[in-house]
Image (cartoon, rainbow, N blue to C red; front, side):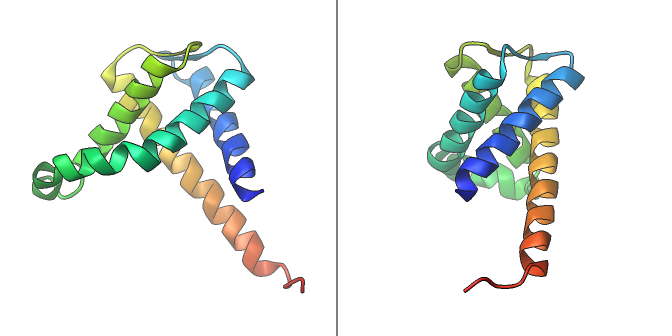
Length: 121
């Protein structure tokens, strides 16, 4: 249930940020759900391989190269999902940064609310 909730929240963020950013386009909310799912799957299966291959560069840049890897994940998603378009690498970088910050903030809020609610046994 948590996974579905995270995907829906990510889809809402995708739609919101596509409306804010001029170089990112999403055709519908259903497409945003597909984008959130594809990004999650790419983060599970492709990102670790990219991180492994680029480990020396990532270490040399003190982890900042991970931002580039996130942008590459967004561009791969752009090529896989019809109805989702990112105009350039820089828009993908900005979009991935905003999406990461938004997801982290919402995750922190949900974890905080989980801690404040009493345990249900």
